[in-house]
Image (cartoon, rainbow, N blue to C red; front, side, top):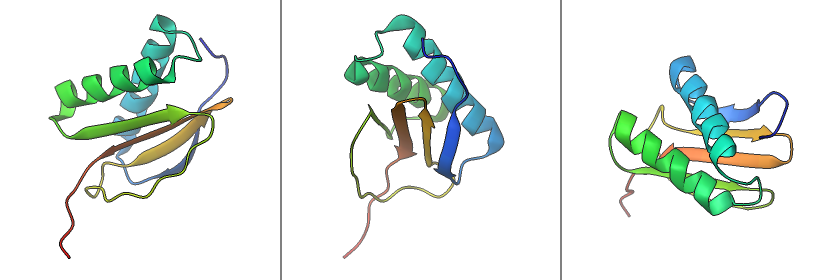
Length: 95
């Protein structure tokens, strides 16, 4: 597991959901190697799906770019040392 404190870069989640995001990341880092970002992301996504209903997305890594639409109140982007975490519940958009 990585030592240190998570730094929230951007979010619109409630403080309770933010704390849960950090807890799930901590649990995932206890279960998987730090470089196994795919397993870490899958773990966090599945836990959010169980707790808050399906439709959650999770991206974990050291370098990535993204563009997405999310439901209000379901987005967090934070870092823990060298790893970045992006969690959100997807929303459809109309054209």
